Amino acid sequence: MSNFQFVKNIYNWGMDIKAYVGSWITKDEYKQITGQDYNGEAQPA
Image 1 (cartoon, rainbow, N blue to C red):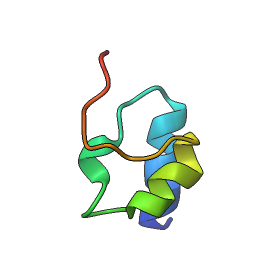
Image 2: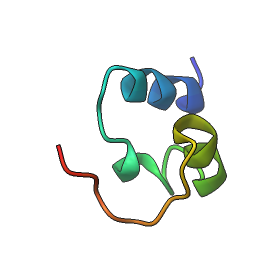
Image 3: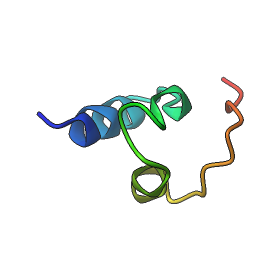
Image 4: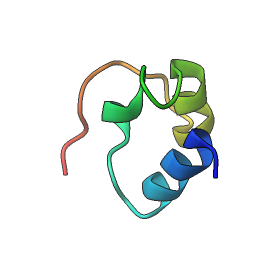
């Protein structure tokens, strides 16, 4: 499983994935997964 697919899976399980941007996925991949631009701020739980 790729890093992208792993992060996409945990996003689908409801987890915040912003901590993975820059190390496991790119900002563009973040947008592909979430449909939102990466702004660097953690989302409230």
